[in-house]
Amino acid sequence: MKKKLLFICLGNICRSPAAEGIMKHIVKEHGMEEGFLIDSAGIGSWHVGQLPDSRMRRHGASHGYKFDSHARQFSKKDFSLFDIIIVMDKDNLRAVTSMAENSEEKGKVRCMADFLVSHKAYTYIPDPYYGNDKDFELVIELLEDACNGLLDVIIKQ
Image 1: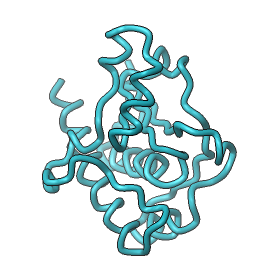
Image 2 (image 1 turned 30 degrees about the vertical axis):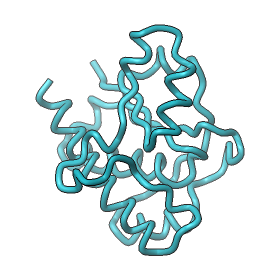
Image 3 (image 1 turned 90 degrees about the horizontal axis):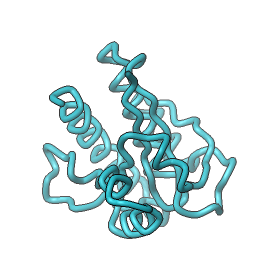
Image 4 (image 1 turned 90 degrees about the vertical axis):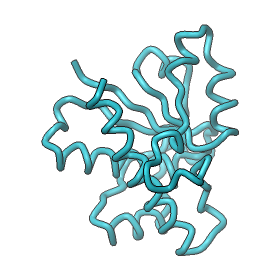
């Protein structure tokens, strides 16, 4: 049975598509891609249909990642479609859990920073949108750490 993961950020053009792309890459490296369905979405609808931010795509490519999903907005139906819904920050957490209709749905929502192994000082994944190259690189570094941590948790279950 496939493990279905959904990554969430504000607009689905920086952090969550990067998490989606990094997780897909890591799962493929482990020869486990058939066991996963990995997607991403945003809280807002501003960027629906767009590719990830060009800066995120450029930084991802420099690390060997392909970030090419098209932005979509999170909806209540995602609770029934995914096993784990991973949010990037506390605002995302509030927005997603406020849409949950019961404790089972709320229980599917996790914070990406909870899976950090080497960067435990971070309590959320910062939004690089208004930042510079250094901010985009930090997000990729944090997401690589957290995606590896998430996979380890899933493997151990």
